Image (tube, rainbow, N blue to C red; front, side, top):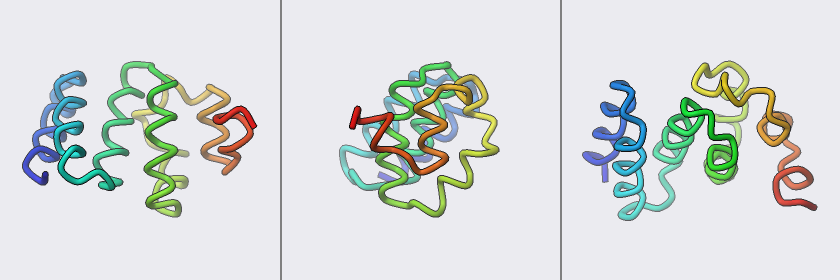
Length: 103
């Protein structure tokens, strides 16, 4: 899983987001609770301007490492294209339930 995760990192840095997502998926198939792989997969979606999958995956990453990611989301440039999305803002503020799950 580490090799696949590292492959995802390399592909992401090259801007090959779909291939990076596939590498993260393969890594997560072996080790499903890798919060780093989840977060970096969400970064790929953020770079593509795809808020819905990014938020869905970030929700899971935050559940696994809450203190680490909520603060990082505030400044991570990978999410600049979705920063104004209300669901993304809810993640940063810790209001996941109301805006993301519809409750």
